Amino acid sequence: MSSTSHSIWLLSCMKLKFFTRIRRFLQSKAARKLCVSSSSDHSNESIIKSNRNEEEDRVIIEKTESELDGSAALRKSIMRLHFGSWEEKEMAAKAIEKLAKEDVKARKLMAELGVIQMLVSMLATEVTGRCLAAIKALIELADGTFTNKALMLEAGILSKLPKDNDVVDYQTRHEFAQLLLPLSSISNAHFSLAKTEVLQFLIGILESASAIETKDTCLGVVCNLSAVLENARPLVSNGIVGTLLKLSSFKELSEKALTALGHLVPTSMGKKAMEDSSMVPGSLIEILTWEDKHKCQELSAYILMILAHQSSTQRDKMSKAGIVPVLLEVSLLGSPLAQKRTMKLLQWFKDERQAKMGPHSGPQTGRAATGSTLHPGRLKKGIK
Image (cartoon, rainbow, N blue to C red; front, side, top):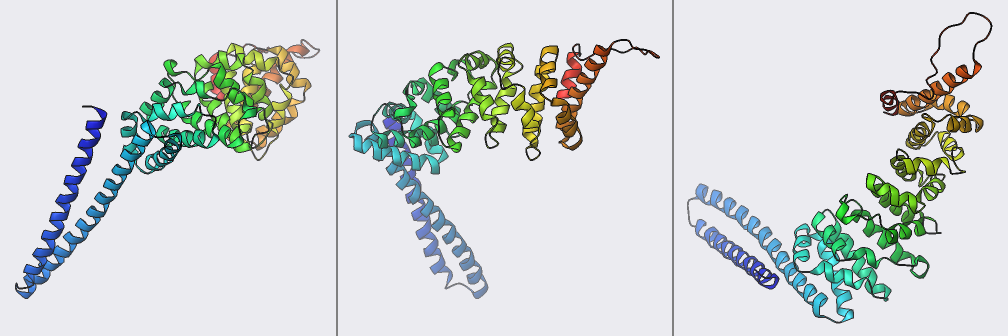
């Protein structure tokens, strides 16, 4: 069945349902009149039942009328989107945004009628209003449906991202970021978003003077991408680690930035990028002092554990940066998880210090320096 035939069939079914309800409504009114001439008890019971049926039918009729109006509006918008002028396409995109927001079922139907491909093609326009209308409609269509997200990616939506953020206004950048957020939840290699054009767009916003809200949305996209192991290499290669370390110092953005860093630090590339950064371990130690940000403390301690494990060089850098007093404070006042992680770090520093002291006068007891040879199972236990 073609898309047009399907639409006609759907409209016909809705009309049939509407007129059936109308007939039931009229029949119920006639039945109520007949009941008046019956006996008193039987009449009262019938009238109550008739009133109840009448009210139910009235609600159903109003709902059906609304559905018919929505179907007509949808059909009109789709026709305008496919065959109308640019002004009509913009109006259609706004109508589709509203319909998709109000009706979940309509989102699937719109995709079947080729709406997504047309909206994606509108993103190439240089007229800001038309581009924004298309983006907002796509955001609603992407909500909660894998198929629609996949169709957007297949239609080449990533190639429509602005090549230069400086020539795009704030609102357009923000809406593009909002659209990338649901798309980035697709963890399928065939639809990978970890491409240079996407990452450069995100990093460009994160390093610009964009609003906190827009940066927060972009960090959400980076968190989704960094959670997929295969994306670690392109993310690190495009310099995301340095950007995340800078943003982790801002309390409004720190949690998401640290979450993404936590996804990357177990990889060899991510760990090396952090080890080579001049901000490490100083910025991470500073975050440990944030008493009002327990989640940030936990994430920072986790990253420091990964960096310190089996690396005397990193532990030495941390020690010189004054980490021990901070760890002691968090181990006493932090959240249960932060306490567990900082106590594990403290144990490593204690064991390493004792190993460096070597034999001394007085009774000797055997010690095992475990600071750099912790069994992976014990590390995992400390992280949890």
